[in-house]
Image 1 (tube, rainbow, N blue to C red):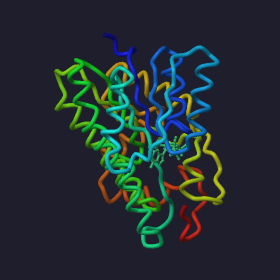
Image 2: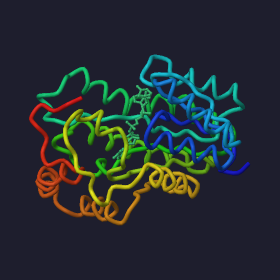
Image 3: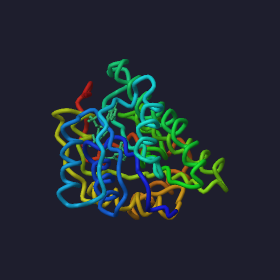
Image 4: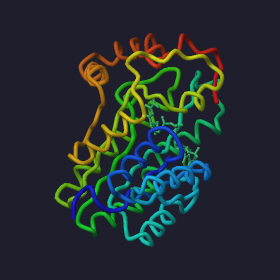
Length: 272
Ligand SMILES: NC(=O)c1ccc[n+]([C@@H]2O[C@H](COP(=O)([O-])OP(=O)(O)OC[C@H]3O[C@@H](n4cnc5c(N)ncnc54)[C@H](OP(=O)(O)O)[C@@H]3O)[C@@H](O)[C@H]2O)c1
């Protein structure tokens, strides 16, 4: 049993980093259970894998925040021979001041970015342990390392994913199951349209592609790295957040956080 064999569950496979993770895992021979709400996108991904004679991509149309989603995914994975990888990638953001945001959307961010990760780990990780090994790849963010005024809930959810992943990695020591928190800086995907629809954004020169991000995440999970931060600039940013006083970090983050993501400044109340 190698780390690069066996079914990979990938949430949020219908676009961006998740679609690339699914493509790359399938291209190297791992069957994929591709999860998202946009079924047509998952079907396209599946057809591409078939046309390229890659390992099959099995679409599963599912809202991962739905009641019982973890058990449903676990049962489908068992039907397909059992999971070797769990990739918790589904996530989204909302930009704008907290008090101008829609409370229902803020709550949805927590359910999607945090609660679904916990529910899926609770449902799937026991099977990985029973199998004697596996990989959990949780997509956090560089936003996990500092407060993120202007998208306050998002940064907090990603800090949760980072902390949870690190703790779980320690608890699973000796089981053969590793947990990796992937913490990318800006990646070119649809997330910015979802987070601030219609708000102009200038792609920063250091932004990476979804392909690069996915390849980095897969290699890190293969190695069993616990925290994986693509690019030297992002690594330095995370390091800075560890050594500077919290007050300095808050000031820096509120001054340059949104321009780091390519926004000149968000109109007040901008949100998806
Ligand atoms: N792009 C960046 O700069 C960046 C940086 C750091 C971290 N990240 C993280 O990377 C992950 C992927 O985001 P992305 O940038 O690739 O954005 P994206 O292109 O918007 O992809 C988000 C994915 O999540 C899925 N999703 C959203 N809500 C869902 C739900 N309730 N149930 C199931 N699937 C759901 C979407 O599929 P459906 O809409 O079809 O359900 C989509 O496939 C997120 O966790 C994000 O926080 C992104």
